[in-house]
Image: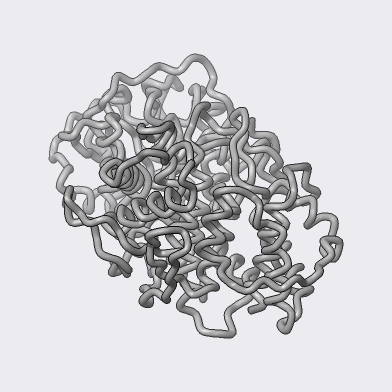
Length: 557
C-alpha cells in the first residue's frame, strides 16, 4: 500500500502542475530521488488515504485521465488533506517538467535521461507501475459506460535474459484472422501504458490512420544536467522513442509488481535496479533489454486485440472523441492491425540505436557523400582497440568519442569510419549511419555498411545479444527499411583487405552464418589492426587503433 500511495502522490503532482523549470536535472535518477523522498513521508497506515486525496485532484484532467479512472481508479475516494508543500521545492519543481507527456515545436516534455543512455517518458512508466500495484486486471468491455466488471489476470511470466526465449503470457484470445471477433476484455496494464496511445497514433484524423514518425528520437541539450529534449524530426507522432521506452518499462515493471507478493519493494529501489544492474540481480531484466523482454512477454496477436479493445473502450467512454467518432468495428480492427504490425516490426524488431548526439559526437568535417541505397553488403569488423568490450553506456560512449577522435585527428578523416558500432550493453551506436559513405573497408565503402563490435575478438567472441544484433536484428531492420538489399551478403573485413580484422574467433563464427560468402577480393594494401598505412586519406586507411578516451563534451546540440 505504501508504494501505491507514493505513486498516486507523484501522479497527482505530475498532472496538476504546468511544465516549468526544474531545479533537479531531467534524469531518471531525479525521479528515483523523488520517489525515495515520498516514500519517507508516507506512513503505511495512511497510504490509501493519501492516494485518494490525490485522485480527487486529477479527476477533471480530460479524456486521457477518464480512461485511466475507468481502468485504475475504481475505489472509494476519501478526502484526505495533503499539503503539497510537504514535499521539497526541488521535487515540486521537477514535477513541472515531468507533467503529462507532450510535444511542442519539436521539444518533447515529460521525459528524462536514463543511465543506459535512453530517454524515457515518465507518464506511461508511472501508469504501468500503478496498474501493476493494482494487480494487473482484466476489464470486461462494457456494452455501455455503466457496465463494468473487473477481475485479476492470470499470472504472467517474468522476462528473463535476452538470450533465453520466454513464453508469452497471453491473457486473451488472439486475433486469428481478418474475421476475428471483437475483443470483449482488455488488460488494464497494456491499455494504460501502450495500447491506447499506439492505436490513437494511427488515427491522425477521422476515418484515417497513419504512423507518422513512430519512434522518433531526439537530442538533449547536455548529458550531465539535461534540461531540454529536442526531436530530430518535426511533425512526428506523439508515440516517440521516449514514449515507447517509458511504455515498455511500465509494462515490464507493472507485470513484475503484479506478480510480486506483499511486501513489495519500494518503487525507488525497484527503479534503481531496473535502470542499473538488473532487477533482483538479473542483468537480463533491465532497461537495456526492454525490447527483447517485451517481445517475450506478449505476442503480436495479443497486442492487436489490446489495441483494438482500447479503441473500443475509449470510443464508448468518449462518444464524441474527434478521432474515433463514426469509426466502425472493421475500421478499428484495421487500425489495430496496422498499428501493431508497425510497432512489432519497426520497433520491437529493430535494435535500439543511440543517435550521434547521445554519445557526444563531434561534427562531421567537410561534406558527407550520400550512399546509393539499398546496399548489397554488410562488412563486419572488430575495433581491436578499445580491446575490452564496453558493457555500459558511459564506457561505450567514451569508446565512440575515442575512436572518432583517432579517425578525425590522427587519420585525418571527416568522421568516425564505421557505419554502426555494437556495444555489449544492448545498444547499437550510430557512426555514419544509413545514409553517409563510411571509411571502414578499403575500396568498398560505398557498396556496404561497416559494422564493428567494440573489443578484440581474436581469441573470444562478443556476447550472444551483440552477435544476434549483427546476424539478424540490424540487417533485418535495414532490409525492411530499404537500406539493405534482401539478398545482401555478409563479409569479414579480412576478406577484402589484408588485415586480421575481425579477429580469428569472430571470423570463424561468421563463416557459419547463412549470409556469409566465402569470397576474397583482397587488395595489396596492408590494413591490419595495429599496422598503419602510408597515407591518411579516407580511401586508403583502416579504422583501427583509436586514441585514449576523452571526456564527454557537456553541450551536445
